[in-house]
Every structure is written in structure tokens, then in C-alpha cells.
Length: 380
Image: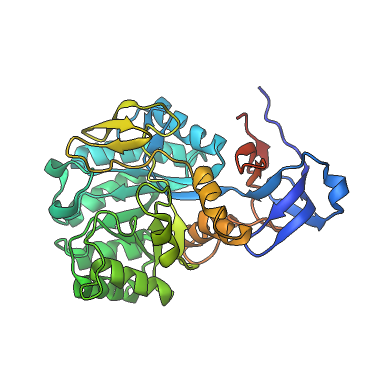
């Protein structure tokens, strides 16, 4: 089927800073004009347009698994999330052997070159054995710079983010490699205390790295008033504008009040989706591990939550029921786009002249009805 390339849309509009009752958006591959119009011109059934969602932590969906899937399965996962409004995403790996990580990185690099994904996120294996969550414990190892170099080489410049624990071996050398290669340093799956986590943040930002927290609160010690742990160190650094923090705001991984407690413009939503996203309850896999999904909640055999089954569109709908539209746009699009662009939104996460034409048309229940990616309307 030929690509459908509309040149304009009308409807309500939410940007990172404004909510317009009605506007016309004109575009080719990028937005050329945004013009407020009379609400009557938009029509009674007009959609609400928001920037395409940006997901920096995504293991798959539609039975496609980025850590282990074939090219066809990984394409199916990416296109599923595109169809639900996530127009930019990183494909996330899980802890695996060096050969497995290199092989899958080389496969996913092809999807980056094809424009289906924005890069690769390597979650592990340099994480804490005490906080491996749904990572295969047999694959969790101390920090290994040679391992990381092999994956960087296999990914051919497409490795965008690395999750590692602050207390892992060779932490400084790994961070130095990430800073040199423009790879986001994401701290998580950690059993570190406050001081170790704070020192890790200080070192990484001192080396010029972009720093995030991998799914803040999950797979790390809990925050208490006398022992703030890594949550306290990372949340405080986010308040200072030094790091950005992922939040799985699906109501399963985090209570809504927990999300709201640490919310600021350095916090952003991630799906942490695995291959069960978009699928019914049943049996699935995440890396080497069996996963059972019941009531939409994915768990491995020991009861640990095994990634997510939500989309960012669903998280937007949940979040906007508590907050205003511009804040919801920043949480699900703009803040993550800024992280991915290493301080700049990189043409994504906004609806303004010059931004990439990534647009999601939502109905009254905030469900995606139309998705335009790079000026091309997708079949959904």
C-alpha cells in the first residue's frame, strides 16, 4: 500500500507548553506551520493532537522481543508501538552472554538504519545480583569493559544507552567509554547506598555523560526517611537538573502518588514493555526467562514483575487524568526526547515549526486514532 502523506490536520492541540482549543498543523516530513483556528473549523468530532510519544526503555510487544527476536519479530514489535503512538523508541536488551548481546545488537542496528528504532538500550549485565529483577541471574556479571567494547562495535554506533549498577566493577572505565561514545549512562538494578549512588552521579556528570535512572524505585532499595538510598540520590539529582529519571507510570510498577511525588521536568515515562504488550494474558519470554501474564501483569517464576505490558499512550491517558495536558506531553514525549538528544529535543517531543512531524490524534478517551510518523500516516 502506498504511503499516505497528509499535508495538514486540524483539531485540539496540546504542546509541551500550551493547550489550544483548535489549530491547524501543516507539515511534510517536518512541521511547517501551526495556526490557531476557530473551534468551529475543526469539527465536532475533531481529535486532540499531541507529539508522538518517546520511549527510551522498551523490550518489545506484539510477541516480538528485542532481546531475542528475529528481525521479523523485532520489526513487528517496533511497528506495534508505532501504531500506538510511540513514534520514537529505543530497543532494550536484557542481561545475556557476550555473544548473544553482540549478535542481537548487530541485528537491531539494522532496524536503526532502517529508521524503525532510534537506538539500542543495553540493560545489564553489569548490574547487582541482589537487584537483578527479571534479569537472568546466570548472566549478571561484574562490569567488563571488553564486553561493552564488543557490543559497541557490534552495534556500529547505534548503542544509545547502558543500564549499570553504580557499585559494579570498573564503573569509572565503563562510564568513560559511554561518555566518549555518546552513550547515556543509566543507573539502576542496584543495591548501592546513597553515598555510592551520589558519587556515581557526580563522576558520570563530571565526565560529561548524560545520566538517567533506570525505572526509578524498581530494582533498587526502597527510600526511607533515614536511609534514602539510590532513590534519594537520583531523585535529588533530578531536582537539581543533573540527571533524568525513568518512571514506569502504569499503576503496576508504581503507585500514581509515587509518580507524582518525584515528578519534575527531569522525569519521563517509560513502558519497559516486553513481548506481551498488546497481547492477551498467557505465557511469554523475557530473555532467558519464562513469564506469566495474568490480569495484564507480567511476572517471572519467583514473583518479580517482568517488564511492562502498557504502552505510553495508556500511560498518557492515566497521567492526564491527574495533570494538565502540557505536563502530560512533557512526561511522555518532550523530556525523554531531550534526554535522547543529549540536552536538546532533537526535533521530537513538540509540535512547532521545524519539529519532526510525529503526531498522535487522540479521541475523547485519549486513545490513539491516527498516528503520523515523520509525515507518513500509519495504518493502525
